[in-house]
Amino acid sequence: MRRVLIDRNKNFYKANLHCHSTKSDGKMTVEEIKEHYKANGYSIVAFTDHEHLIDNSHLDDDDFLAMTSCEIAVKQYPDQSTLKNWEMKVCHLNLYAKDQHNIDTPCYNSVYDHFLNNEIRDLVVHSCGEYERKYTPEGMREIIDICSKKGFLVAYNHPRWSLENARDYLEYKGLWAVEVYNNECNVTGLYEYDINVYDDFLRDGERLACTATDDNHSVKSACGGWTVINCESLDYSCVIKAMEDHNLYASTGPVIHELYFEDNVATLTFEKGAYATMSTNGRRIIKRKNAKNADGENTVTFTFDPEKEKYVRFDVVDEYGKRANTCACFV
Figure 1 (tube, rainbow, N blue to C red):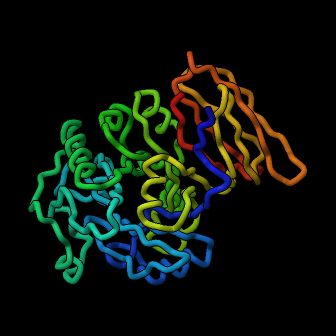
Figure 2: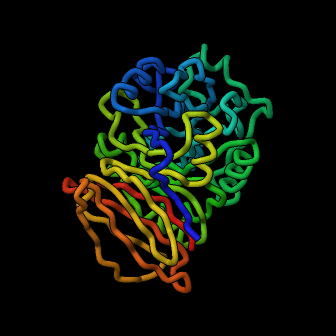
Figure 3: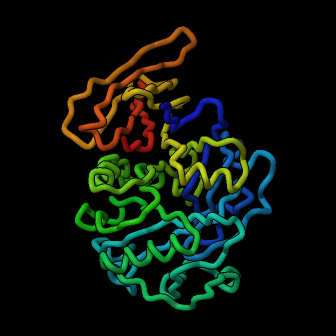
């Protein structure tokens, strides 16, 4: 039986799933962001402004989709700033609304809304009132659970910037995805590409996706990392379904055309890739593979053992060291 994770017969939509506008601490308006990203080949932007959900669906057109989303923080010391206490741990989560018009912010806490001006603050909907966010394993699991039940996909952001390690983030159960690349952190000198965090979650039994994002607050950090969503149409529910099913890949350069599994063999087709590798849960030695077809595509196959491999995932690396990462397929 063939299982298809990336289908060349469906559409590919380039998405920035982490973005800040002037509605919080960004430098560009949502209209300017749309214009800039459309000019650079993007079809989807998730406006993840801090601590509030805004319906930006007025920006939608035949070639562009605005995702209703936000970024929330949970700090070790809620009354302190990460700009002043630079050793304080913090967890940032992106919430993607399954319903584009859902602007009821879950787990709202006014301590964290200092990014908002008065105009935006008056627009924030939080029907459940104040919620005490606790930076503890139990507190984080409760927040993720509440947000998921309220109709959001929950992604874990920039663990290096957050100063968190496996002892912290492996307690966070029920996440939809983990951010493996963050362009804002890289532009500002805080290196944030770490596929090992994704493997930590996978080896711990969590079945989540991986994303690459900009987290851009200005033009200088835009268009450096993206997530390609593979689905039938640029319809909000269709995009959300593809995200839930992990029909996507993260990239800083390489393009993937296809990934499917059949008879314990994975077939991966890509372009602009110097080579591809397969990773699993175990300490298996896997040679990198490169095969050039006449049409310029690279098609490689990997054999896996479902008796030994709990999951397989793939990395494509181009001649410049840019990477694309597929989501894991549990076998």
